[in-house]
Image (tube, rainbow, N blue to C red; front, side, top):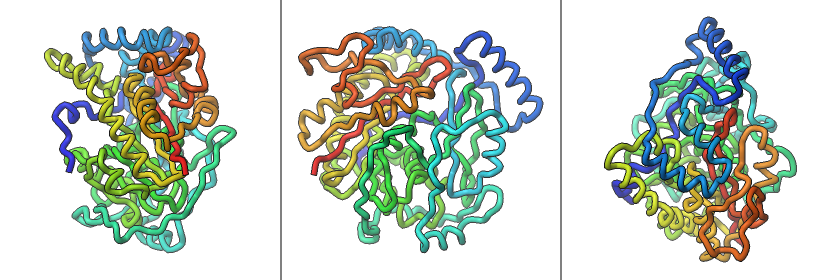
Length: 449
C-alpha cells in the first residue's frame, strides 16, 4: 500500500461541499435570482436550500494566486478571481443515477428551471444476463433498493474473475458531444439538496461541479472495455463512467485508507450489487500501477491529486500557508509519475485522460509536456473542437496558455490566441461570472500501436 505523505493528505482535493445563492451577473440577473429564491422558498423549501455560512479567504494564498495567475491567465484572472472569492456564486450540476428510478427528481428539476447539459444518447441497456440480475436487485419504487453485503468482498480486486474485453474503437465527434449522462444544470447557483447515505438504498443523483464531467466525456468509454480510474476517491468520476457505459471491468484505485473508505461508500451508494463483478476497489500505489498491470486497460483516467484552487483559498491559515505553497511545488513530480504509470497500464491504441481541478500550468500543461518528452509512445489529441467549442455556451475555456515551462518552444503564442500546440496539450475550464464551473484541466493522450 502507498501511504500518502502528510502533506499530500492535506492537499488531496475534496469535490463535495455545495454552496449557493448569490451570483456575479448583472444587477438585473441578481433581481431575477432574488425573486426566484423568494418564490421557491415559499413553494418548496424542502427542495433547494439558499443559505450557507460565509467563509473567509486566505490573503497570502490570494496574493500568491494574484502573482501567478495574472501572468498565466492575463486579463481573464480578474473575473476568475471574483468568482473564486464568492462561493455563493458557484454552480453545481445534478447527475442522475441510471440504476434507480429518478422520474420524480427529474420532474422537480425541470419545474425549477434546470435543463440538461448534454444532448442525450439513446438510453443505455445492460447485457441480457446482467439485466436479469439487475431487475431482481432494483425495485421500481421511489429510490430503488439494492442490498450490499456487510463487508467489501464484492469490491476487492480479483484478477481471476475479470471478464474478457471487447476491442472497441472510439471515433472523434464532429458535433456537440452527446452522452447517456443525464446531468441537469441551472443558469443560477441554486442548491439541490444532497441525499444522505443509507445502507442498502441507492441514491438517485450525485451533486458535482459539471466541469468534472469533461474528463469522463474525453475518456470515451465503451461497453465491454476495461477501465482504470487511477486516483478514484471520492468516486464521482467512477460513478460518471458507469453512467456512460457498461465496462467489462472498472478498477477504482485509491491508496489512502480514509479516502478509499469514502470511495467504497460512494460506490455502494450509487451502483447495484449486480455490477459487483465488474467494479473493484484497489489500494495500489498509483505510481507503480503500470508495472504491476502493464498494458491491461483500454482506458485510464488520471484525476491527479492537485492544489485545488477553490479549497485552498478557504482552507489555509497562519503557518499552514507557507507549508502549503512548498507542497504545491512538489506536486508536479508526483503528477508526472502518475501519468507515466497510466501510459504503461494502458494497451497500445488505448486512451489516457489526465485531469486536475487547478489552473496552475505547472500542474497541467507542463506535466503533460514533460511526459510527452519522456514517452514517445504517447500522442496528444486535440480536444478543442470535440469538447471546448461545442460546450462553450456553458463553460469558459482559457484562450491561451502562457504559463508553460520556459524554453520548451521556440515561439510563444500571441496574447489571447491559441496555438495548435497548446490545444493538443489540453484544455482548461476557468470560472467566470454566470459560468462558474471549474477550474478543470483535461488532456487526452493515445498510446501508439
